[in-house]
Length: 375
Image 1: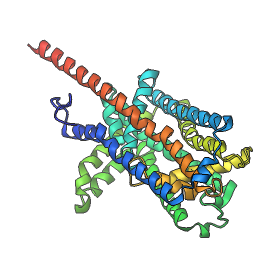
Image 2: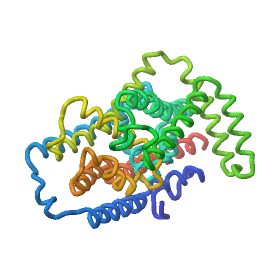
Image 3: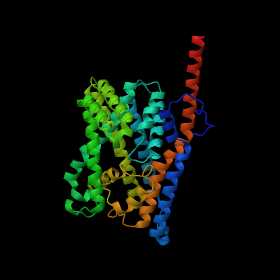
Image 4: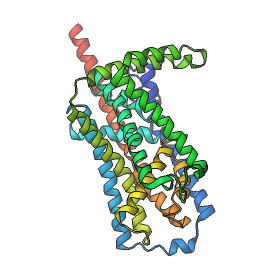
């Protein structure tokens, strides 16, 4: 944040200022720039004016674009529902919807491998939530997201085989570069999700001790403070979740599954809208759904903010058996990113400054009340 920002004179810690810096509005410049460069690169390499002119923007196409937008809304509301469940009703529906906008914006301007967890901790803390509940919400979402992917992908693989990982592949040994990257990303996801699960539900103290010990090594010493904090958060989250009912966990997981399924169905809908020859039977669409889930595992470890550029280029090659026309692939991926990614950048520009002003005003009011009571 610049010196002219309303938070510059506020009593935020150094770490909190770093979080606020990560969601400043100028952060949108890099992902937008990378995305534009990627789209222009694809247009230069693959665009065919005759093919583009042949696209019929019929009622069918517009209908499925509308359905894709409905799935964008469904995804957002599902995340809001999960936040409401995990906060046990501490937040109103309106507040949950607002906070998910901020959470998604922070993910959109951060490398996808980093995500918005630090921002989520800060934001929830400003909403007068207890430290234990904040830790529970942020860390348990990591477990829930991991559980969805780690649990569903092996089942999908048993059903569809290696073709769900890469087009036209029958044997796992033939999956090639992107396939190997998928296996690496899935394995990494399984490891860190498993560590979070163990740390929250089995033995948080042991994970706390391990994190503290490992980060005392010279190469990892700069992570020591954050590792100690993470270990402490796991202990708090574990204590908070220990007495929760099965109903609480089932509802939280179902909301997670709804959110991720809606995210994939956005693309299902857009592809149906543009690729008229694609069958719409359940098996074909479910196989496409499985491919998209595999693609999102790779996207989860993109080095660019929100996967900008990386996603646009990955899209065409990953779905060539469904969208074999490069021009159509570019059009579909561009619309997808506009409604499911860049829309959150725009929403963040509107919502975050207003939210920050409210936070600053509340902090000032509390400080004034404390000064009056002490005088």
